Amino acid sequence: MTANRALKLSLISLLALLLTGCWNRKELNEISIATAYGFDKNGDRYGVSVQIVNATEIGAGKGSGSRVPVLTVQTNNERSIFESIREMGTIAPRKIYSSHLRILVIGEDLARAGIAKVLDGLSRDHELRTDFYIIVARGATANQVLRILTPLEKLPTDKLYTSLETSQRNWGVSAKVDLHQLIYDLVDQGKDPVLTGIRIVGDIRTGGTRSNLNSVAAPAYMQYQGLGVFHKDKLVGWLNDKQSMGYNFIRGNISSTIVQLPCSGGDDLDVELIRMNHRIKGRIVDGEPRIEVTVKAEGNIGEVECGMNIATNEAIELLEKELSDQIENMMKAAVARGKYYKSDIFGFGSAIHRADYRAWNRMKNRWEQEFADLPVHIAVNAKIRRTGSIVESFLERMEAESD
Picture 1 (cartoon, one colour):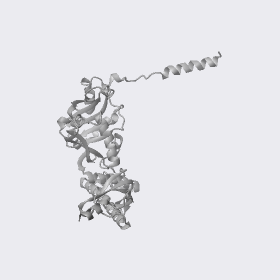
Picture 2 (tube, rainbow, N blue to C red):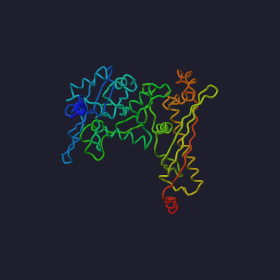
Picture 3 (cartoon, one colour):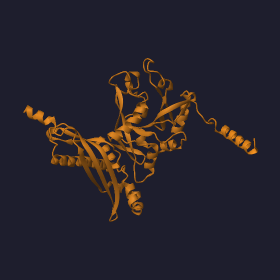
C-alpha cells in the first residue's frame, strides 16, 4: 500500500467517525412533544397552557377499546412566559419539546393588554420554528380552547391547523398568520396586524371530557369567527364575517368562496368564485395620499334558489354587476371598520411607502390620522364563466305549474 493511499484511508476513517451519531439528539422517551401553547393574562402573571401529545395513544391500534384523550394540558402561572414554560418541568414528566408546535392561542384579555413582550420571548427561543399559526380565543381563555376535544381528529391541534388553512383558502373569513408575519406587521409602520378569532360553541365543561368524543353531535366544538383588529400590539376590536371577507379580498388571500346575490321573491343566487387577483396601488396627489384597490374575479353559478332565467346575456350582465357590487360593498365595509379603529390592517401605508418614500417619511409619524382620512377607491370587475350543467332552472317551471 502506498503512502498516499494509506493517508486517504486514514482521512476517510476520521471523517466517518465525525459524521456518525448526533451529539445533541433527543430520544422520544426523553421528551414531551408540545403541539400547542395557550397564553393568558392573570393579573400581573402569565398563564401558560400546553398540549402534550400522548404518543402511546397515537400509535394505538384500532381495536384498543374506548378512545382516550391523546393529550394532556398542563398549566402554570409566573411573571414571564419563559419562566412559566420552564417551571412546567415540575409538572410534566419530561422536558417539553416545542419544535413541533402548530398552534399558539392567545387569550382575549392578553391580546387587549398587548402581545409584544410575549412575542419577543418566543422569537428568541432557538427551539421554536416560525411556521406555527397564531389565533385569539374570542370570549374565552386560551386554556379553555386547548381543553376542547375534537371527535374527528385525535389531536385537536391538527383540527385547528388544517381548519384555519381551509377556511382562509375556501371561505375567506379567517387569516393564517405565523410568528414571522405577525412580528413583521408589528414593526412595519404601514401595516397593522390581524389575527383570526376562535370561539367555543356549546358546553365548555363537557367539551373537555371524553363524552365530547362519543356523541354524534358534539356538546362543544371550536369555530373560527371573524378577524381580530390590532393597533400596534393591542387588540382593539373585531371584524364580522362579511368585513373579514372584504379584508381578504383586499389582501388577495382568497382562492375560492361563495358570494350570495339577491334574487326575485326574496331568495338567493349563489356564485362560486374560482379565480381572483388583486392590486393595491398608492399614489400622492397634490401632496395627499390616495389608494386604489383593483380586484378581478371569475366565478360560476353554483345554486339558484329562485326561478330566474339565466340563459340570456342580459341576465348574465346583470348578475356580474350585482356580483361586483356585492364584493365592493364587503371591501368598503372592511375599510370603514378599519378606519373606525384607526388601524391600517390593509397595508395601505406600505403601498404609499412603495409609491413615494419621501412623502411617506413626512407622514409616517401621523399615519394613524392620515389613514382615518385616506381616500380609498375600490374597483371590482367580476365575470361569470359558467352557469352549470342546466341553463334554465326547473324551479321556474314548478312555480308556473303551481299557479
